[in-house]
Each structure stands twice: as structure tokens, then as C-alpha cells.
Length: 369
Image (cartoon, rainbow, N blue to C red):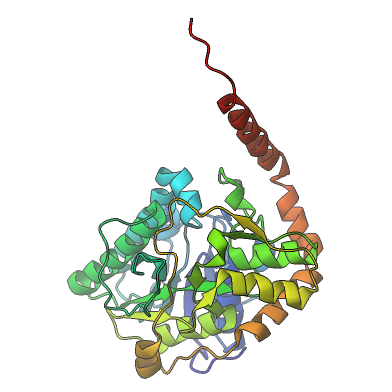
């Protein structure tokens, strides 16, 4: 993928070894960037994700590190802040880690960039569409950028992501940093490695997102776990489209602005499961599971009208085509994916054993002393 307007530019990509970050790094290089500085602590990523290119320099550390922050150079053209404590369920299991790797990273990065004599021309922050989505299971409306933010968010992840937007607004208004908020929807595509990074305390370290989980299980002819009858809906956007949107934010985004990087199409989880099973030839029926007790914005999708009008951005890859490409990539990289998954196998087994013990304990009769 080649994007115009990047020739000779210098970029910082925080979280650049992750799924989206590594795809972005490749796009920057293909567009002619002269230098890409990647900061990544490999909490949920792998160094192998990064391309071997002399224009890429890797700082293997957290952006929270004061020495790393002090070493950020003047005169960058673009900064992309994609680092995150991955996902809603991980944040529910460990809110303090979410604060450290989401809220604090954003604050410290913006504070440091505000002190530069020549800060980046654009600072693109990865927001989360789920933060502003309507809390409904009875028919979603497309979420616009002006949607109100509930005071009753579903997870620390959603809280930290919207706080990041608040900090972007503050540093734009107070320090004139050219921050642009890019609200992600459900990104999928080649490069998302199940089990990548370090153990983060829950099974979601491995089973992190719905699409790669379904693709892997379907290739293994396993049942795809569909919660709550599969009535939940998501806006699924292919990673190449999402990356083009990030670059559009960096090149044409209004400083202080916010944009949905969305397909604008609502897809049910049941439809997703059935399509993946069909494309992989998976003969195993879907396994219905209970609803998740924390997710109240079960049906949601983003409105892409503002990004189309102001950025010239529109998602191009149809879902079926994007899933076919993702399936092909997963087949080719099964060995690498399973090596990452296996690294956490003992802990997954411990969690399963503990859950079995808890269930058995609940079945024990209570005997009064």
C-alpha cells in the first residue's frame, strides 16, 4: 500500500510493533518516509512484526520512560500514538495497568511534545469508537463524532481512551499542539497475532479480538463461540483502510479535530462467524455462549461522513474480501501465531483449572458448624 504525501517525512510511531502500528510503519515506508522512530515495550506485540529497513529505528521501551521521552527529537513531521493496554476485558482485570499503559502514556507523551521547540505538525491519537457508542442491543444508530459521552462507561479501557481525547483537547487549546483524534472501530486484517506480547492476566492475552479468534478456530475446524445469540454488531474495518485513515489524519486532519475511521457498515457477530466458517470450509456448528455481563453498547457502528468530507477518507475493502485476505495470511503464519499462543498455555490451563475448582466449590453443600 502506497500513500502519497509522505515523501521525505519523519515520523514517530508509539506502539509501532503492534498490529495496527506495524501496518502503519510499512505504509509510511512505502510512501517514502525518510525516518520512522518506533517506541514499543512489546506488552502486546512482537519485534518480528517490524520490517527490516534502515529507515526504521526501534526504541524497545515504554513511552512512559522519562529517558525515552527526553530523547524524542525536534522537527518530526508526524507522531502517531497507538500504544494501549489492549482491550476492554484486560482493563477490567487490571485497571491499574490500564491506567499506566493508556492514560499515563498519553499524558506524558503530550507533555513532552509540548516542550519541544518544533513539535510535530500533527499528533494523531488512537481513540476508541466504543467509548461514545450508544448503549443498546435494540438497534444501533451510526455513531457520529459529536455523540455524547456517557458517565457510565463499561470498562477502564473506555475511560482511559476518552481521557486521552480530553488531554489531546487540552494540549491543543493550551499549548497549540496539533492533535487529531482518530476513533477506531473494530480493526481486522493481516498481522494480528494471537498471543503476541507478555501475559496480561486473562485468557484475552491469547483470544484478544473476535476476528482473529474466529479465523484461527475456523481453520482448526473448531466451534466459533458466539455470545448472546450473535446479535451484537460491530463496524469492521480492514487494517489497510484504517492505516490510510491514520495517514489522512496526519496530512489533512483539522488540529483539535476528531474523526471516525469507520466502514459505516453494521455487521452482526453471527454474520461474521458464518462468513468466516464458509470461507474456511469449517464444518463445525457455531457454539452459542452467554452474553458478556459488562458490554452494554452491544450494537454499534460508526458514521464515516465527516472523515469522507474533511479527509477524503473512505473504507474501500469489502468485508468478504478482507476476511479472505486475513484467512490467507493466518494460514501462512500459523506456526508463528501458535508459537506466541503456546507461550501462555500454562497460564491459560491454570485459569481453566481455577474456574473448574470454583464451579465445583459452588456445588458443595454448605454444612453448618
